[in-house]
Length: 142
Image 1 (tube, rainbow, N blue to C red):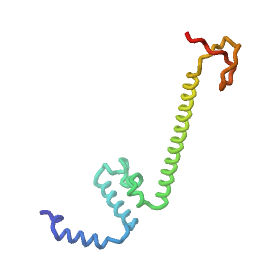
Image 2 (cartoon, rainbow, N blue to C red; image 1 turned 30 degrees about the vertical axis):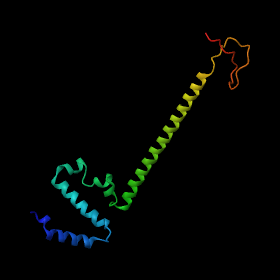
Image 3 (tube, rainbow, N blue to C red; image 1 turned 135 degrees about the vertical axis):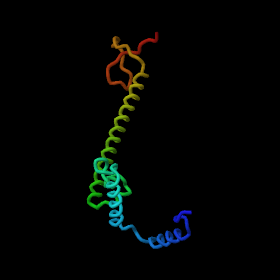
Image 4 (tube, rainbow, N blue to C red; image 1 turned 90 degrees about the vertical axis):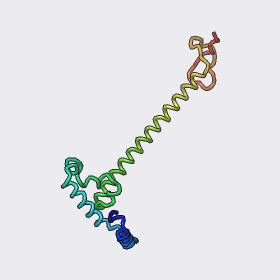
């Protein structure tokens, strides 16, 4: 049996949890602890060195870590994200407007195709109602 599974260890854990209960996380202390952890990772493992994603990079992309950043840096990143979201929303609106316009054009073309085909060589008759251009009488079915 490991120590972590013993009743003594469980009692220590529950005592610690009881002490922590009701206290908010001190963000600067938590940040310092995490920075020390990732820095140690970078010292021991080349995969965490700056050329390969620095030890601090997790603070830039992970939203859980981002709340631990200094307020000015966090505000700058949040502003960049907000600008990106606004640009994306604008592109979506433009795309939606374009697709609606194409849909309306296809619908109008379909409606025009359903109109009777007119013989443009015979100019003797009045145009059907709803058409602007002068047109001729309908062609006889063949």
